[in-house]
Every structure is written in structure tokens, then in C-alpha cells.
Length: 286
Image: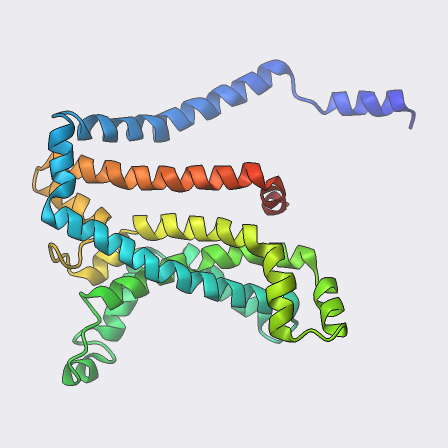
């Protein structure tokens, strides 16, 4: 086909300007309706009675305890999921073994299981009437309605994020570089640290950011296993619900605004990463 024919074929597949404008308008309208306006309402309601009232709501002891617990849970769950994601993606992308497809299915399971169901699973396992309930009571070990259950529930709902970022990245890179390093006498650990890890560092960071955002905002699973104990087991999303149920709209929106700000910070870091490393976004789209 001549260059003119190729040019005509390409132009024939392009949408008219009015179609592009219509699609863009619909996208902007949808984002405004379901994202921008709700976020605007959150910050407007948080500051409805002034900065001092909103700041006082955030500094209230129960709110401070909820903020600290949220950050602590994320600080435990995210590194665990980062290590798990590295190991799982390494095993799936670099090795062939029986049951690989089943392992991938298990990794995707939290995406399809309701967080509330995930919380109920831990109640069934660690509750007083659960599988290990009597043994835990006899040994004075408290998991349910305490930090361990909150961490476990958060890990469950967030562990696919890092793995799902790294698996396609490692699969695209193949094993040629690792095989070359091994042929030159490098050990498996040295090969991972000097070859594999540098190649996936941006994908790992991207996955960690998404995992952290999800961990801080988790509500359903944590709500089931936490017990809603003020000042002890309430994370920020749970504290927002309690304040709202108590008709403390200003306090609820103030804490919600802080949670939104943390999400915005994560989004800014994610966008900065994509701008600095456009190949990461390209690999994900591929």
C-alpha cells in the first residue's frame, strides 16, 4: 500500500472532532459529579465552622488515636505486602512450576471477595467461638478486636497491589539478564539485588504507593474485626463513621478531609513517579 493509502486508512479510523469533544465532556462531567464535587463537599463541611474548630476535631484524643493506629497499621501491612509481592512476582515471572495459575488466582482473590467477608473469615478463625478461640483464650492471646486482627484484615485486602504491579513488569523483562549474571558466577541473592531489584524498583514503589493508599482507607474488613473501641481500635475511616453517627458532622468531615489529604499526597507521589518514569506507566498499560 502506498504512503497516501496508508495515510487515508489511518485518517479513516480517526474519530471526528465532535465525537472526541463529546467523550471528553462526558468524562469531565462524570469525574466532576462523582469525584470533584464530593471532595469539595468534604473540605467545605470540614471548614464550615472555621479552621480552629476543624483543627480541634483533628487534635481530639480519639481522633489522634485513630490517626496513629491508621499509620501504624499501614506501616506494618505495606512492608509485608512489598516483601510478599516481590517473592510472588519473582516466583511467577521467573519460574515455571505446577500450580502457577492457581497461585495467580489466589493473589487476585481479594479483588473479588468483599472486604466484609474477609473480616468475617478472621472472626470465624480467631473469634471466641472460632477455630482457635478456646486456645487463644487459654493462652491469653488477643487477636480479634485488637491490633493483630486489624493488621491481618488490612494485609488481606491489600496484598495483591504490589504483586500485580511487579508480575507483568518482570514477565516483560524476561530472564536473560539473570541468566547472564548467574553464568558469570553471581549468586542468586546477588543476582536479585544487583539485576532484578534495580529493574523493578519503580514498579515496586508504584505498587507500594497504591497499597498504602488502600491500607489507610480500608473500612469494611477492619470494621468487622476491630470492635469499634474508641481510642483503641478505631482507624480513621471508622472514627469518621462514629463521629457522623453521633451527629458531629464537623468532626467527621475534618477527619475525612485529613484522610483525603493523605490520599491526595499519595496521588501526587504516584503522578510524580509516572512523569519521572514514563516507562512504568507504559508497561502497566501494556
